[in-house]
Structure formats: structure tokens, C-alpha cells
Image 1: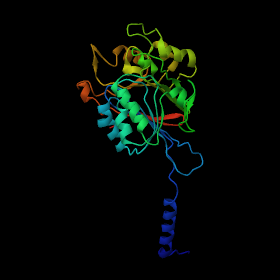
Image 2: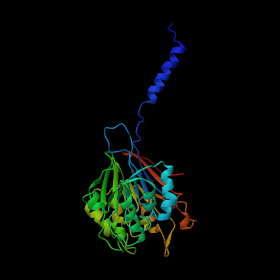
Image 3: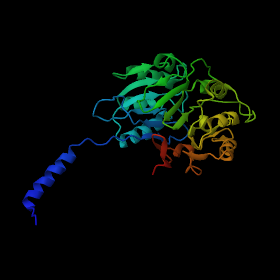
Image 4: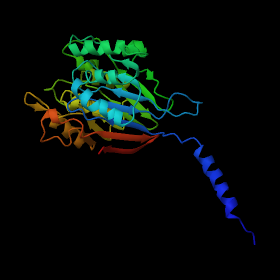
Length: 328
């Protein structure tokens, strides 16, 4: 009968444990997209599964931030949220368009973190927040500021952003040639595909006038359907313009065919309207689309008190969704 001394076994175990502790940690290959609750406004945090480097032994996915609500919520909600997650650098900031519920919140973010790339559509608004955003972008150390996503960062619509070898990220719209009344239609529209799962981020891009039939299609939505009909189908649709009746037309929905819809809104009244419009919600429900809303728990709150309690996170591994859920 063979006998093993415990005095020999223990050092062997220690050697094995030391060997295991020196092995590289398996990289997290999930794509995380978090829709941060900024009340009435947009803020989307994207954490990619790849760092662009195919041969190194260090894993670091990219951190991308799209919009950040108004300036106060950027400072009070977005910056603390990012710090709690341990974000120390932001690889790219995208301001989808020059409206006060999207762009100004990025200013305190730029002032709080090192940023590598900043971009926007390029429509030059006269608003004070726009001038402050441009100033912050230009003054950010070691940062490349692309004042027009097209053609400065990507040559043309339909071209790809390099967010890592695992993802296909297509710029479908970014139009500086708008006016004060049509700024929503300058919105940067991006489709992110991770294998067979995809997310279409619409900014505030519009598809019709408020009083038009939902069967009508105009503006950016028509442009997308006409030019990218075969590319629009997406698993998840970030509903444009906070669920306003100016977007999410039936012809557009028929092309996108989403299984999930994310609505960024915050119980804010515009005249007699509070977004999202119930007609848009009904359209989504009638098409069997599961809805997640950043105003889920806001019905009895003032719009000023709505941010930060209804964050939504999508976690994707290649070809499948792990979860779409509200964060506690």
C-alpha cells in the first residue's frame, strides 16, 4: 500500500495554488449597454468586449458614453454612476445632437475623466451649453475632438466605427446640415452588432410630424428605410425622441422588427404632453415588443426627481442576450 506524507502534500498544494493564481483571468467577453436614467434625456454607457489588441495578454474593453442628459444630471447622476462602476478613462464620447437633454451633461463628464475621443454631428448651435461643450472638448488634454463625425471620424454614412474586432458598429446617420427647427434630425444613429444580436440607437431622429398618421414615414426614418432597408433589423431598438409621436413610425418598425424597446424618458410635461406618447407605447405593444422604460417608477414624481432610479442594462454575449433588466 502506497503512503503519502502530509508534509510532502502540503507544499505540492501550495505550488498548485501559486500556479493557478498566476494564470491570466479569462476576459469578460460580454457587451454591456447601460441606459442610465437621467430623467428626461438620453445617456447610454457601452462597455465593449474587446480592446482592439489581438495579441496582447491584457484585457481591457472600451468604454463609450453616448449623451448624458442636462448639465446638472451629468454632474449629480452620471459622473457618480461612472465612478461607482470603477470607470477611470472614457475611450469615446458621442454627443448625438445639440439639444439640452443630451449634450450638456457631457461637460462635467469631460471635466471629471480622461477622454480619448469626442465627437458630434457638427451642427453649430448658438446655445451656451453648445459653446461650453465645444470648449471642454477642445481643452481636454490628449483627446482627439472630431467636430463632425462625418467626415472627420468616419468618411461617410454606412462606414464602421472601430470598437473592437468582436463588434460591427455602423454609423447610419450624422447630419450637420439642419436648422434650429430640425436639430433632432442631425442625430447620430448607430447600429451595434455582436454576432446575431444587435442594438439600434436612434438619438432623437424623427420619422414624421406629430399629427401625421403612424403609417406615414418621412425625414431620417425614411432615409434609413430607403438606404439601409436590409441592415435595419435589430434585436433591440432604442426608441427615438423619448417615445415622441414624431418617431417610431409603422413602416420603420416593420423594417427594424425589434424584440425589445428601450425608452429614455422622465415624466416631463411639454404643454399637455408627457413623453412617451401612449400612441407610441401602444404601437410597440401591438407589435409584441417588450418595453423597458427609464421612467418605470416615475409616475408620481416631479420630473426633477425622476433621474437615477430606473437604470436599464443589456448584457450580450456573441449571438445571444444574457439579460435585459432594470438595475437595482
